[in-house]
Image (cartoon, rainbow, N blue to C red; front, side):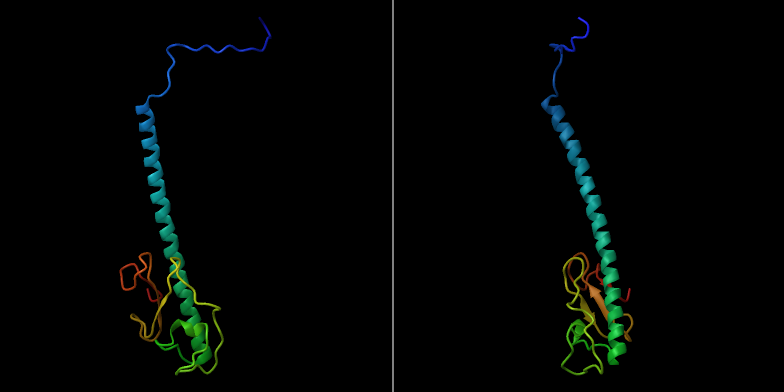
Length: 147
């Protein structure tokens, strides 16, 4: 029977599917691979957020230098970073002032930045601090503009 185009499938009584145990083992291996992949991706995400936070605190520090160039001084501790958004009304009021941000930036974890003046490592400049991945200030993972 040449050329009929039909193919015949032969099923053997010997053919069998996967056992339940084999399926469980395969699913376990897939689960293990996925958990390792998620851990690796999560770690790289934290690393990226830390780098973004380092860049952010340095950028805010640059804005504070610009504030000082315009106004003749850094904002006081009480005035804080809000002085980059709205003109301070309490002393010391800067000589000249421009809004340097429309709204205060937050770190990659959605937390507000901390302003310390004088800075902890260099008392002549202010320090901008992100709470870091744990979201708590004064812990080992804080990210400072003076680091």
